[in-house]
Length: 268
Image 1: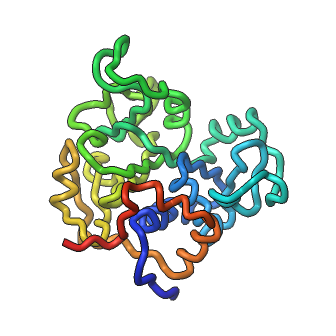
Image 2: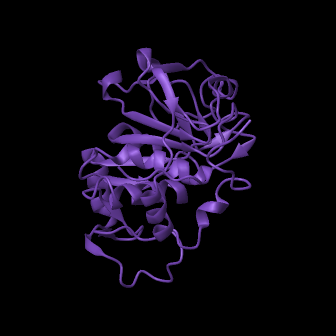
């Protein structure tokens, strides 16, 4: 068993927690949107799941993940095979993909929004990205969420202002689909790890990050949460995992992803 690290940042704790969602995936395409989710997928490919597929974000599958910082060019990367745009869509529609995304809003059904906030659909208060690939991706393959700041602004009380991806909402299921066809998996936040394995696919607290209380999570969530039996603490990174993360992020870009780069173990 690897030695547990005595000191680590919250970003590193979240990366290691997020990497676990890819542990038992086998040969699927891992897409981490954002530096920390990308680092999480890279860590999984480097340790627990060498069969994981990752791209260079251009047109090649890699046999070894690229670092998330410090690269000057794509020269010398471990290209395994070509994966053009059309081939990516074949992969998406086949279901052999797991995306970790960072929505602006998530509701109790696991529906997500990256499109717009407030106002009306025609005149929102804040215009974001649009729904992009969320509808097709969410109905075709597994998705997980990465939330750097757990709050009621993200985990909203009602439905998302714009429902951009499918969730466990029976009133919005496409014709011919059932709730069993939906695959929203894990939620990694700066407070905890959650999933949708509560009663009737209710969002459920799986573990609390060191120093975080269950009430703190509830106070920052706009809807009721289930809780796993024997709720425990999110495991700390190992020394080996931190060493690999440092190799994947030699310029320590991870330290700039969360405000003030807080420690992973918070004390009251």
